[in-house]
Amino acid sequence: MKKIIHSLLLLAVCVPMAQAAPPTPWDSIAQDSVAGSTTVTMKDGKKHRGKSAKFTASDVKLDPSGESFSRDDVKEVVIRANRDPCCSALFLPLIPAAIALSPDPGDGVAATIGVAIIMVPVEAVCIVIAPPIAAVQAIKRLKPAKILYKIAP
Image (tube, rainbow, N blue to C red; front, side, top):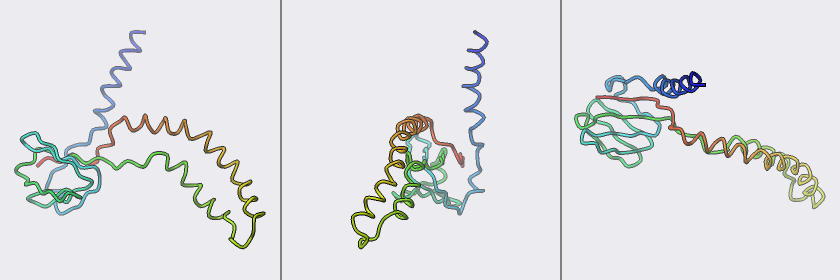
């Protein structure tokens, strides 16, 4: 039992280190715009956040705030992958189905009732599947997003 616990602890420590992004040189990313959740850490310890960043040889500019930071003042820039909205995979297939099955306004009440009868099983499946998917998504959001770049000046 002790060996299993030690193995699990070792995995818990080693796996996140293996997933860490290697440092990317500033000069290799200069003149590029990078999309992703961006955190700029200054040498004095302050952190500034943005949705994307534009790099030049001398500074980095955060979007949407427009703040610009000199390369000499920056300690580190970490860019994480953007997260998908929760449960979008569950509801996106319903949109084309609803559009394809929507009756024309001139078809009358019978066509509307027919579409409603067809959509009931689809909605029932979504009602059954939604809580487990929402729980899994909530657990996934507890983990930090994947680091795309870790840039050091």
